[in-house]
Length: 359
Image (cartoon, rainbow, N blue to C red; front, side, top):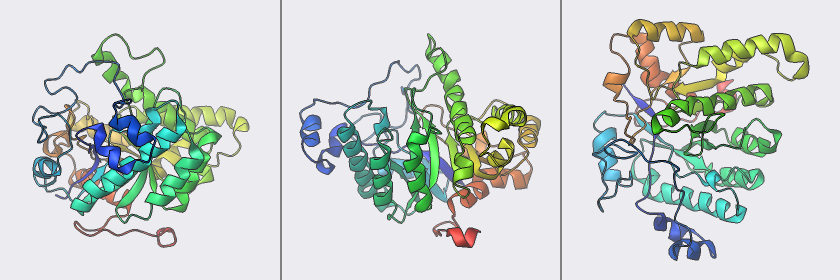
């Protein structure tokens, strides 16, 4: 069966790999070691730290910076039709020095275009932006949208931004005019309402709680209504929580829609039509529970497969998506829903569906 992996994290070996793509004074800030990248507020407890133990670059570092290794371990190993590159270098995590944040985003996008997208037609690219400066972020989206493999904008989930806020509309307007999808992915800054907890296990369990508010913010603040053809993706946050959010939003809408007259459909209808969730990390559930969850969502077109390569909780497609699922449902999860979302056709062929054609 065909497979489209919607969340593959490419990287660089060291932050200094971005130096050739940066202007001064930012080039010197990295070259001199004045800034060494984003640090994490916790220690991983898995053998390979944040990644699979078998992911080692040529220099011995545990980073997904080697195309040949990624090709062998995932692209060819699972005969992927496409792999959507989502990175884990998110400039929005920088909370000051906006010029530096914008320069980092542009540099990283140029690095990925040269060192990743150019090497394999199976790669689908994502635009990394510095979302704290929405107007500059929109210009970066316009710049990168011309690349034939770029299909989405990445919005990192941090601890102080709800993207439904009108401040961030220029980002969505740029994605809309360039026919790009919008994906959300947690970061090491994402947390629950009471922080990250006292153990990594707590923090990892809390990840979906950082993504739920983004869905609520998008719906209630009118993003689905303002951009009726824009589509959204939630990555690496699980999926079993979605029915609750749909039910709760519908209930609040019925009793409080006077406060938000711009919402023209039931929130659950908006979600079914244009929100997609990647399956990783898949829950430890039975086949019957899988089918029941899809039934509770009210659509078999919401879930898309992802491995989360190269992370330690990698999902093998042959294990994570049960073979005993109904064949048509399994096919939709493994590739058909993602192909529809990104406008992709047969393996090895990339087809961009125009807005007019989609209508």
